[in-house]
Structures are given as C-alpha cells and as structure tokens.
Amino acid sequence: MDFFYAEMLIVLPQLNIPNFLFYTSGAASLVAFFYSPTLHRKSDQSFKDQNTLLDILGIPLILSSDMFNTF
Image (cartoon, rainbow, N blue to C red; front, side):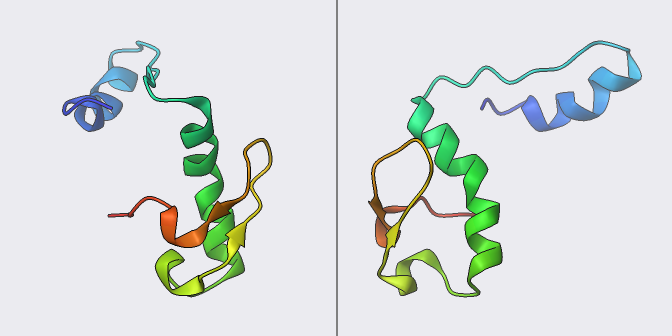
C-alpha cells in the first residue's frame, strides 16, 4: 500500500473513479490480513500473548507470535 492510498479513498468516489488496491505481497499474507478481524473477535488477547497455532483457511498453521503487528 503506498503512502497516498488513504487520501485517494476519499477523493476517488467524489470523482466517480473506481478505486482498487494493487497488493504486491504474497497471497498468504493477504489472507492473514483479511482474516485478522475474525481472529480478534475470537479473543481479546494480543497475538503475541496467545502463544497458539492459528488455523487460517488456505495457509499453513502459523504461530500467533509470528503474526504481523497492527497499528
């Protein structure tokens, strides 16, 4: 995601221009990113504190401590 994408999300609909995100990383990281809200709904702990294997459809089991940091 580039630096200007957040601003473009506001401007493009006003100009009736469709918007999209060109994701240059691997599909597994994209799946994990999109599935992270579901994981957060299942537990109120941080990933690093859970110390479990996460079962995310389409990717191998991953340690919760290896998940990305959220902002």
